[in-house]
Amino acid sequence: MIWVWIVLQGLTLLGVVNYWRHLPVERREEAPDGVVVILSVRDDWDGGAPLMARLTAQSAAGRLLIATSGACPAAEALAGADVQVVHAGVARDEGQKVHKLRAALRALRPDDQWLVFIDADIEPPARLVGRLLFPLVRNKADIVTGYRLLLPGRGLMAAMVGAVEMQLATLPRAASATMPWGGAMALSRAVAERLDLDAVLAGRLSDDMAIGLAGWRAKLRMRPVRDLLVASPLEGRVSDLIGFGVRQYRHIATNNRGMWALATAVVAVQSGAWAWALGWGRLGGDRDRLWCGLGQGTGAAADHRRGAGA
Image 1 (cartoon, helix red, strand yellow):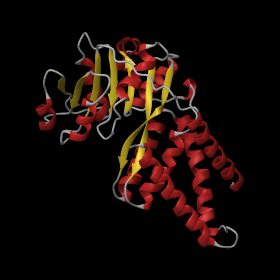
Image 2 (cartoon, rainbow, N blue to C red; image 1 turned 45 degrees about the vertical axis):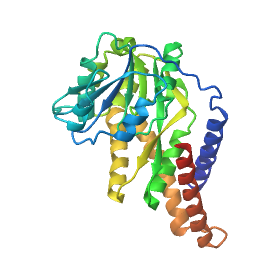
Image 3 (cartoon, helix red, strand yellow; image 1 turned 120 degrees about the horizontal axis):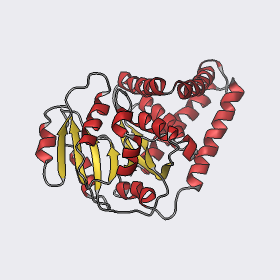
Image 4 (spheres, rainbow, N blue to C red; image 1 turned 90 degrees about the horizontal axis):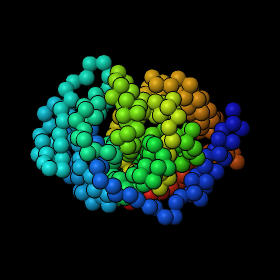
């Protein structure tokens, strides 16, 4: 197993190098009319002043459609000409976020032609909307996605989770192997109607997995925007971080057991090899050197991620 682990580490390094080599030099954007940004929030949402400021600073303008479950005072306070609020109610047989997104889709206006989905916990750069729309407007893709860049807070566990996620963020991606991320995703109104997006999401727990699998089945062109690693803070207690990981893998298992089995096998090899190295292995006869190297590597990963999200 140790040799499999070594190979995986080497492939991870090559993936990071490949990612950086293929970052676009010209980060072109589009700003068409008819853009709507769809945001699902909890009813206790505080209004997200930093997020609202970042959305206001977007290079591509669009109106904001906020979906809540019930009464959300902070969302109601934002309602106006460019901000619409829709109340979805409580879900019965599907994920609550999915339920809210379906309500948002039913509330679209006739002139809403470009749909951009974002999460409330991201720190979007000013180019987010314009970069997501560029491949769509130029007819180079049908579904476009960014990817989450977890920014670990204090604590070794948060740093380690962030470092593992960075490996996934920098994996080479082809259209046939791209799964959209609901935190920064865009598609046209025409594609949404072609997929019958409301029906695709009905009864699902995960919005992005359901959309991605429907896109695969419809043979749509799904494209990741490599330079859109969108900052998302990662904080909380160890139990919160473990719960985050469990939810991610539960979504995968619910929607695609083959993908779950592959991901579980890779994580199992990685975890088993690290357990061997930390518990029973030797590094030149000096285990302290191993712990030192692990600490430096984890710290470097956290620093790199903070810098990338700036």
